[in-house]
Image (cartoon, rainbow, N blue to C red):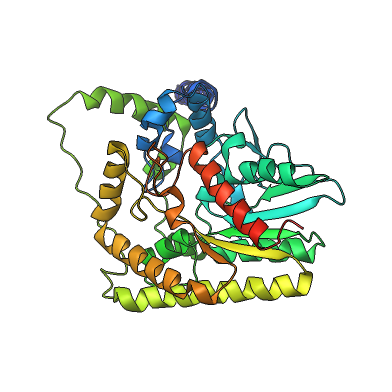
Length: 396
């Protein structure tokens, strides 16, 4: 009798496992293949990055927009890379293509031996968030350089989301070490350096440093059974549909907002922290300057524009973006202090150019959030960069 009971229990358990495995495979297929554009997978939601920029009016007129944002979410998977910690995993789509080295490809780049090589560094603004392959800053630089130079041109986009300046410098060092020496180097950074300091109250570290350190050092509670279940696609699929059902419940209580630790909550003075960020930034300038002298390339540092600065006539959508940025008072104060100090010192650094006024007098919408712009905005930025490079004889 007991053997029959055990056999029955074993059969039921096996059937349950088979059923769960089938459901898990179906859920995996849903999230990897059948998720319609406009649906954000839970694992790809980042703090401060919602779907509002996808709904900017500019994209309603672009036939590629839906495909781009779908591929953007699918290309968010990251892999560990030596010395710089992360880059995106290889991905091939219609609007985004990333090679085996985690580098977003630039259309038209002709990287044969003897080509004119330009390396670009930065964070998501240079990588091209919001723009298909042909609309990034490196893509516009590629097209512009092809018009003024004879022979092949190779613009390589080494930027990556959330990269601080030092990650770009380390990437440059690795290329130089391998013998891949460029003719021109372009850095388009500082905003992520500021944000990393805003989070931690320290300079010269990665974004989300505490979370990265905690994972490395194992400072987290042991996983419960529920934690393990939450990582399955089955749980995510059920949670997705339950969430849709519960949206209609007007009596559902909103969770209390999570308090974020910042330099201000740590009691650190904005003037002290901004001065340290600026010193670090100009220290990085000197490192690139020394490498340029040693290896014989031209270099240019560009201070990225922000929606809260400059004299662009803002559309109603852009005004809302500016208000949103200014509502984060501690971050806005730190950014403003850093930018003012860098621009004040810029005459002492001949290869540094402020892009803050790049959209002055331009009426149409270019911003899609506080720091990213449309492909048209990227074109205007690239044109200003090309003028600076040409004016410094960087095209010879």
